[in-house]
Length: 237
Image 1 (cartoon, rainbow, N blue to C red):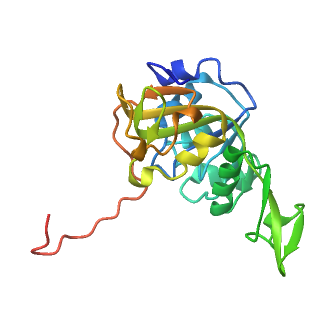
Image 2 (cartoon, helix red, strand yellow):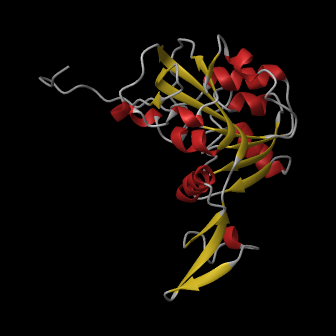
Image 3 (spheres, one colour):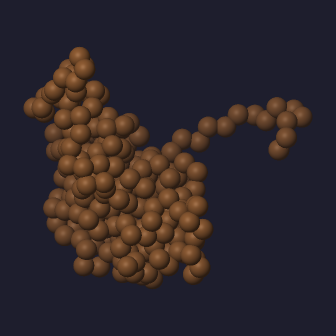
């Protein structure tokens, strides 16, 4: 049963501890559970392992946990937009496991589906496969990848109902459904929390996966890189 909370801090009360593994939805700054990330920062927990596509940017998204020196280990597929992340990794004071983006998605999906491991051709013959079992199937080599199950999953949704069913908006969906299923405990923030049940046809994450729910605070949505071009004369506006 999903419990509705008034604030992110209230929703995370009693769930956080040093050294835990937290999986976080989002892609860049799109679909980040910002209220929940800020509540993790404010809790002061340390030595975290964070599983996410990337670590936000400097001072935004998961970058605020790096700024506060709360992260010890990261599983991610991308670093580029966060200078502090890159600096700490190159200096050797942040343990980073790079995971191909599709492999990261499948490791989370497998964790949510109760599949302990799977074989993939991605990474075979590269440093990413070092120390991992490799087998041949139908004449092609595959590396064994372990599923990811996090102590805690943090996700952002566009709409939710009081039963914990979640729907996402456009590309802000990204890793959120996979993360929601891969947590032993899942906490979701939603921009709109409805009293009436969501139409089953629009539900992406069923409420069975969501333990705690909180309304997301209204905020300006940050954009990593804003690219614009002049509007051509006569083009629709």
